[in-house]
Image 1 (tube, rainbow, N blue to C red):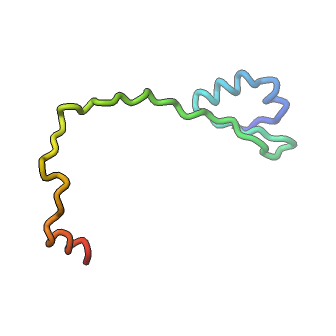
Image 2: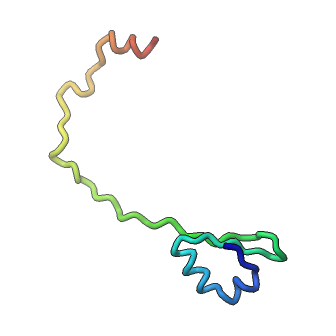
Length: 76
């Protein structure tokens, strides 16, 4: 949607509502685009720590060196 600056001044509340609903609005001065009104990204709910507690298991040798054959395969 493209509006001139005078219309943007008089209809700002409506334009902000439309932008919040997902519409991008270009504001023009003398027919040339000078600004854009667009929606802000929605904030996500904060992540909760520990959701996988007790569901994952690491073996004793998790950080042991890889066998030489596997290391050589990556070096080729």
